[in-house]
Image 1: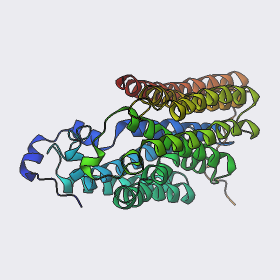
Image 2: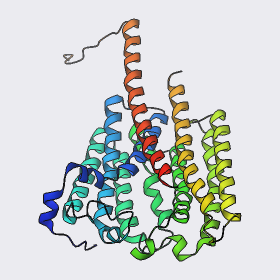
Image 3: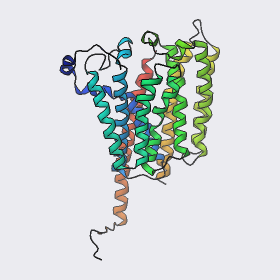
Image 4: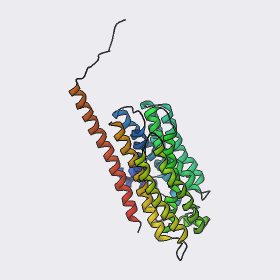
Length: 306
Length: 50
């Protein structure tokens, strides 16, 4: 584990509710809750409002727990990067042991409650998601391979599958299609950010693709993943969870993304970082994911109401 | 065998409509809240990269 130089007594004196909330990585949690909600609503049956709300709550808390475990383990590298130095553990507001205990307790609670409220498949998938993010990604891949984002992205992509399983007790192709969209979306989204913003991963010893493989290789991989994402985003139109209107809209949005990825590939700029198209792709990728899942949500709501 | 705890409530059409409207309002409220929080959070992130 990391060894953030902290005075535990000082940490206890300063820690407040906001610091514990920040340990849950609220931004990632909002993505998790949103995509899980779409999985829940798109599923052909639901367990009713109360249990649906409990399921969403458990998925959100489980995601937050894995965030807390990530911040506990990564406190040493968070402390040397400007972007993350103010997180509760490296800032000395929460002691590392407290962050770890917080994450473990929330993990156990969220998985157990989801099992009691819904079914074993959903609870098992949530437990796997937490394990994958906290252990496979954080403790193993993040510091050992420049493909860390690719494989670690699986954890962020699983919530709609967990939600679908909570609603129906099954995890069919449609749910895994939602998983695949988020999974393939993650690498170009992060790599575009790492091209257009100077992030001090090198100082922290984290092997991010631009640092290890170089900018031309990063630009090629952004294009390759985007070329895969554009048709994948349309695929739900050929399943019961979405229709032709969704397909046309997602296709157009995917073409926009692909055009920006092409610009990244062919307009490297003076420093090879393709900063301007990378900045646009980063922003458009955020809008794209929102748009695609919001469209699925609208179609599901319309279907549910006749 | 004794029929214990098997009360059945029959709703009138009007009550069913009211129940559906109430469910839609609660469900819609939850959905809109989640969508709004997600949209605002991530749009702020997009705006922060210039």
